[in-house]
Amino acid sequence: MAENSGLFTLDSAQAYLSAEPEMTVESLSGRLHTVSDGTVRTIFVEGDSSVIAFDTFGTPGRARAYRNAIAATVPDKPIASIVYSHDHLDHAGFALDLAPGAQVIADELCARVIKLRGARGQAQPTRVIRGPENTLTVDGVDLVLLNPGPTHGSGNLAAWFAPEKVLFSSDTIIASAKYGFMPDYHFRNLITYLRDFLALEWDRFVPGRYELTDRAGFERGIEFIEAVMTACQQAFVNFVPIWAYEPMKAFCIEQLADRFGDLEGFEDHVGQMAIRIVHHYLMGGWGLEDAETPGVLLAGLVTL
Ligand SMILES: [Zn+2]
Image 1: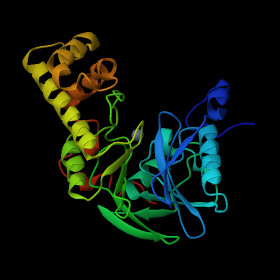
Image 2: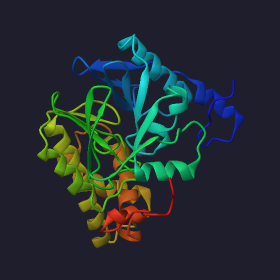
Image 3: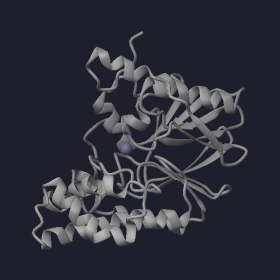
């Protein structure tokens, strides 16, 4: 069977695309659940007559494993809605394998990027939302979807569940240092936008990867990114060869190990994190998202 292949072109990628990992589901309330394949994590919510799934996981096999995990948790209700947390294929690339008939809710910028990308398996959003905050009632569930501005990927949406005091924000903060490769983080305003989430009332944070954390863990995650950004600027000041991995890794370990050396994955990931971040200062950002007024992002360039 030929799988939806995203952007892969090799036939031999089928083995990767088909693998169905074991999923671990943890219930956060009677209706709200989080699920992980051991790396990527997301949430799903039980509505009156259907399930609202956030994201899809990153291959057809993973999407099927996600669908099976949902069916095992909520046996009688189909997945009728999918919410994309952002455009990336490793989180939201395979709605056509998860639930091909579902409505797909996404931010307008996410929808534009997906339309242009044309990846195999990534369903085009059918319900496009705009602006920093949208409250939608979907099958009896009040969804509060927040886009404070560009944090990661395109058209990023966080979800706040006030009754559960839960915040979900994919690929922004994790409770470790195990995500060093940060090609599509938007550092210009990242820290400001993430700190703004602390104004909301929540006490559990669901990241897009690895384990859940609390407010203290979330704040520490912000402080870690901020500290690496500071260390990277200091590397320029100290004429460290900022394009070279080993010197940057050594410099950041020297600067940060006292405060953050206990974070899981610190030594293995801080070097590549630094290589990415120095290019924020070197080049001025990854793209339009790092403009000072991100509201103008790609406006009008793609008709939906
Ligand atoms: Zn991502």
